[in-house]
Amino acid sequence: MAETVKKRIAIYGSTGSIGTQALEVIAANEQLFSVEILTAHHNDELLVKQALRFKPNMVVIGDEKKYHKVKEALAKTDTKVFTGEKALEETAAMDCYDMMLAAIVGFAGLKPTLCAIDNGKMVALANKETLVVAGDIVMKRAVEKRVPLIPVDSEHSAIFQCLVGETRNKVEKVVLTASGGPFLGKKPNFLVNVKRDHALQHPNWAMGAKITIDSATLMNKGLEMIEAKWLFNLTPEQVQVVVHPQSIIHSMVMFEDGSIKAQMGLPDMKLPIQYALAFPYRLPNDFPRYDFKKPNTLSFEEPDIKTFRNLALAIEALNKGGNLPCVLNAANEIAVFAFLRNRLGFLDMTDLIEKTMQKTTFIKNPGLDDYFESDGEARSYAASLIHL
Ligand code: NAD
Ligand code: MG
Image 1: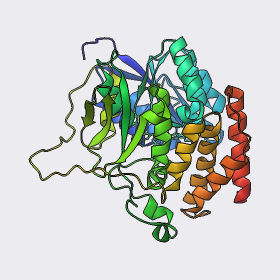
Image 2: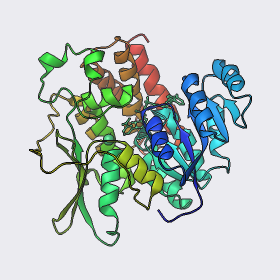
Image 3: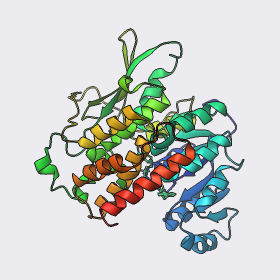
Image 4: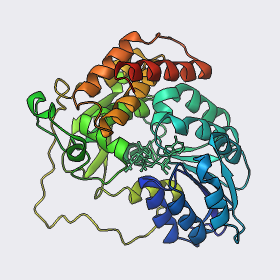
């Protein structure tokens, strides 16, 4: 990487799976990056530890009850401490950073990401829900502000990498690979008894709890189809999913001549995180390499959307558009929350999402306020069904 001035990074959601891995990447490349903002929702202890290590300009602890503890722990440092939801937006609107890594999980990531875009800052986007909920608005604002949105999600990073140097060439379709999750090949009679601890065991990736459950239900791939549509300006028909259990090909682009480009590597989120942080440069590292000398099989199969109906619901939302992806996302967040607390069965998550999609008011051309209203309406309805 040829730059001498350090890129100033703000990590929203620094205590999560993506956030902590991003700090590992930064720690290995401190000549290239400085850490300016770190934010966490509840985990004050880890946030303080990170702040003492990386000396950011400011931190935000979401949970207001923990403000004084964090403030006290950082009293002898130059790090400013803020708290509350509004502080996420206020800090994102500041000038002290160059790139936001949007690594908050769920709908909560939307507002800070929009603030960063409005502020003209580059965004490395891990928070897929932002594009699922309001992809049209987010992409439009990014174009208006000339803000590069660099995907961190491994599939989208793969597609992004395949598209480098191809601006003049037409994409026929993109092919998102799915590992299939821990229940690949299982049928409803098995899934009906699945409990949280089993669903939290992903075969290839170690991730936060919500995305791990989404991977087990295949909702994650549905959210990613919607994310891909917005990021790469595609029609629903141009987005295909294929199950590839080895997670070596991270996704592919088929061009109009039928030629296919794939991006490959071992499943390690540090790779797409590093690519997004350093873009347009690649950085050397000592991550393990894929070994072609070992016996290898790369296989592909159709996803079973009759069993994993969350994916079918997401495809329906992708096709219908409007506020339906926002409603799908809200209902799914409630469903996963309840499942993780043993309040809802594995297959019941799908029923909850389906009912919420049927019940919530459909809006064909929503504005930003409509998305917030639809999110609220869908959440209340879904929660009422399970007495949350
Ligand atoms: P995680 O649960 O491990 O971490 C989430 C982070 O967001 C934490 O720092 C937490 O403090 C913060 N947070 C949670 N709720 C919040 C709220 N209401 N307000 C403010 N902050 C809040 O999640 P993760 O696995 O790191 O995933 C983060 C995002 O990246 C998700 O949108 C996920 O879909 C996406 N993503 C993750 C991976 C992965 O490998 N983990 C891969 C691709 C995409
Ligand atoms: Mg992914």
